[in-house]
Length: 154
Image 1 (cartoon, rainbow, N blue to C red):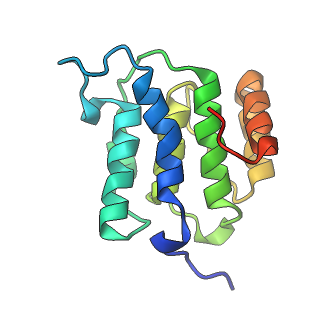
Image 2 (tube, one colour):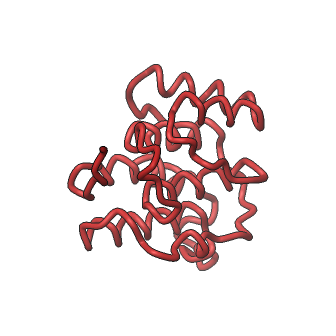
């Protein structure tokens, strides 16, 4: 039986790096219109900061707090880099998957930037990639390239 990993076993800072790059490329950055709570990247970064400060992986109820009205344009290759990092961190959790896991929260935030619906993580990176391909073949190709590279190059 697989045990649930602790925050110390996941590189949460690695999850933040592609989000930070998204923020750096945002037209609203450093303006009064930049509102973390209404921004998908800002929300994901806030979740990560909270998880790091508390040493936790699950934030009960947080999945319902993902912003639903962030319509800013995002660069698909940067989203693919972030999704690849969530796949590297999540790996094969299967039965231990939680929608309130910070990795899942980051993944759903990234998905919401480009997809019209979230993808339930099936517990397998390969199955997840196949599900992304059904919805957005170009994103899937970018994601596969990022996963093959083995590093976050966004």
